[in-house]
Image 1 (cartoon, rainbow, N blue to C red):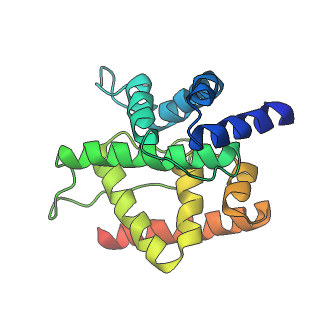
Image 2 (cartoon, helix red, strand yellow; image 1 turned 135 degrees about the horizontal axis):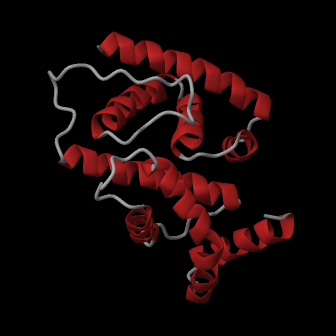
Length: 190
């Protein structure tokens, strides 16, 4: 997406936040494909025949976004970061409703060494990782946010840097440290 298109998307986001319903009509086609890609990132390793589909997740996201009024959208990446967070919460709510990660069950080991290969399809893994991420957020909110944006949101290093307001080098450093911390935390809980 070129810079002009990104700027136009940001302007539409701001107009929509100010209550312009026409802006929303123009915005949806601009962001829908990327939101479906993001949803697909979350659901890519779901078991065959699973009931969750990217379209359903995006529709649930749109419902959540309707409640987000008056937010000062900084830029397009900010919108996708918020969307990633909301998708994560939607999936966590679904996983918790299934009662997947009850106390006392066997530990869930999560391999964070290769984010592309990581499967968050099992609700147990998602809930275990979310709990570890919440613990990290209490200690270092920025590192937790970077993990959320990169791992759950699928944002690139530069996009993550723009959302968090740090350099790409800082993102990579925090990313490495956060992964190590999360691995240790997940092993310790098991």
